[in-house]
Length: 121
Image (cartoon, rainbow, N blue to C red; front, top):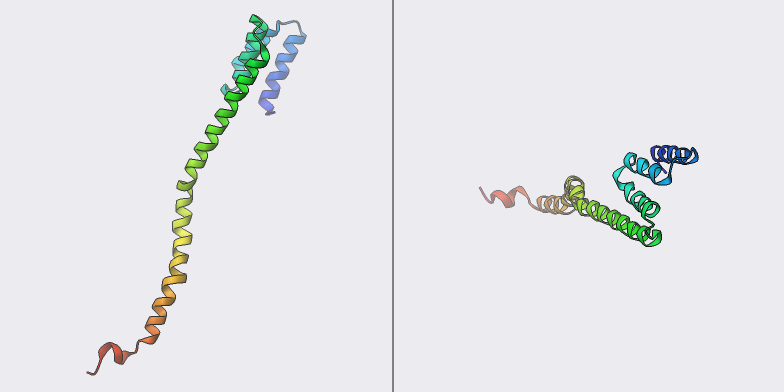
């Protein structure tokens, strides 16, 4: 768990131990945590205040979190070909030219002689 989030959770546990209602401590915690971590807290707050079923709501929140991580990974994967273009253009293509075209040109120039180029002058 990130250090900042651990500190916030420890503060909430201390408030609960001091006698604060669970829903109030979770609400304050929800306002302090990053946006990505708020959904499970919203589910816990609803379960403590309204008596909403916890398991189904947490499963839905977990599914949403997995979907968000999958979308983020797909976005990174779509950017990969663009990021690979510069190394391809600067490293692989010059090597291809040096290994394929240069030997052909050098071999052709070696086979030519000055008499073949100018003929009988």
